[in-house]
Length: 339
Ligand code: GDP
Image (tube, rainbow, N blue to C red; front, side, top):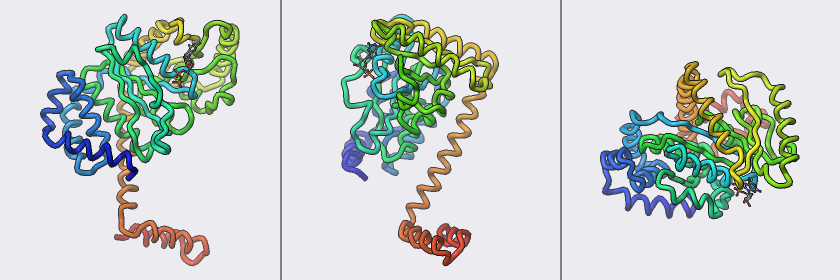
């Protein structure tokens, strides 16, 4: 366990000792943000003794979850994700009467603790809005662990009455796929005037997106952004159509001026209506839940395997034995998984 974890975990345990699952749930359903924050800290805790209580809280909240629009937002560092969320989020809570929770998955925070998403002053306006709740990325040792607690936090936020959930991630690795697996709609932010390779965006990510938004379409960049929009629109036509009947779109926007922001929201609402009417929306969520169960099961089995005493040394021995042809892979496997 790294130093930071220990600090969080020990301060958690003191704070959580006195609360019952019922107290957490009552507070959450009441919309008590402090209680919501504490419940999220509980589900983020990696201390095994916190799990039963966390599970009980989640279980009791479950009937109150699911009634939100879950949106994943990704893009390279500096593309304007936090500015975009600030501008769109403020519009949503002030002008659309929405209640918004913003969660983040930051793969860098688990490796270096030098978080890309968390170490700047972000979303200052949104932070002060009573109908917005912003929670930074949890610390964790693996993307899987961080994703698990983000998914659970999302459910808690829904139970607390948030009807719109944004999950932000940095477009630099595996985390986009993880986020796409837990949201209804996936939005990729791009910069005007640079190809996606230059922006560090992998082709697969563009294919996953339901909407490409070219941010920073303001000032001198407007002509560049318009050209980029055409290029991307053409590129999207080369991809196979989505099974849900939605045609991914390319739009331009500016988090700075607010141009294009309301139009983006309208597209999200259209998307939700279209996919709800066709039944795809809930079908997709059911599929996500099943996949989630499988992923969690695999993670748990792996975890249990590596918990076994001396298993890493034994694995290293088996690697050598297999590599040198001393024993077969099949035999090594039996040796490793027997109790
Ligand atoms: P993130 O790393 O993707 O979260 O990006 P930030 O939101 O921190 O933005 C990076 C920089 O781009 C900041 O200096 C922002 O002020 C600036 N920025 C973000 N959105 C826009 C925009 O729409 N137009 C312009 N001109 N600058 C922007």
